[in-house]
Amino acid sequence: MIEIHPHKLAPYAGLLQRVVEVLRQYEIPVVSTTLLRHPIDHAVSLYNYWCGPDSAVGRNCHPSSVGHHTKDLMLTNVAHDMQCMQLIHGFQGFTQLDYNGKNISYLECFNLLKNSFDWVGTTPRMDETFTRMEGALNIHINISVPSEKTEFGRKKSAVSRDDILRNASLDHLTSTFFPIDTALYEYFRRQGGW
Image (cartoon, rainbow, N blue to C red):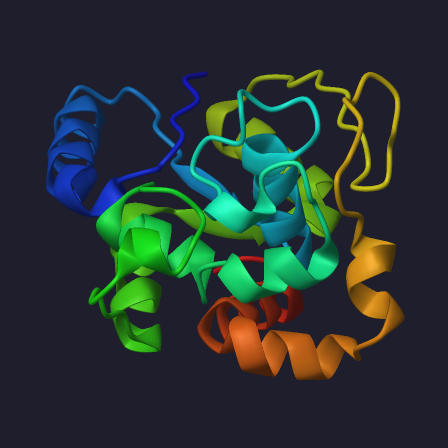
C-alpha cells in the first residue's frame, strides 16, 4: 500500500492515471482512494500546525497573528474552500493571501476527484474506506485511527473546533468560508464514496 498526500494533485493526476492503467494491464490490483475531512476540522488542524504555539515561528501566518492565536484571526486569514484549493493549486499555505487570485469551482474539484480516485471517503467513515480497499486488494489492513477529538500525542492547540463553534453556527461558517468543500464533503459522506 502506498500513501500519497495529494497536496498538488492536479499536475500529477494524469501521471497517476497512466501508472494505474499500466499496473492494471499487468493485472496488478490497484485501488486509489482519498479521504475528505470536515472543512472546519481541516482548517483548525492546518491553522494549529502552521500558526499554533508549537509551530515553527508562525510560518505562513498573518503577521499580526504571530503570538496571538485566536479563532477570530484564524477565520479572518483562512483560505476559503481550502481542500478544493489544495487539490487544484497545491498547498501554498492556509491563508487567503497564499491563494490570491486563484479560482476554483465545485465541478472542477468534483471531476478531479472522480477522475483520479476509485473511492473518495470521509474521515468519519474511514473504516468503510479501508474495508473496500481490503476487499478490492484481497489483503488485510490493520490500522488504528485516532478520532478527530483525540488529544493523545498532540501538541498544544492554538484554536479548537469548540472555539470556532462557540460564537457561530456550523452552517454559517461552512457556507461563508467553505461552501465548495462542504458540498463535496457532504456528497461523499452521504454516498459513502462513489
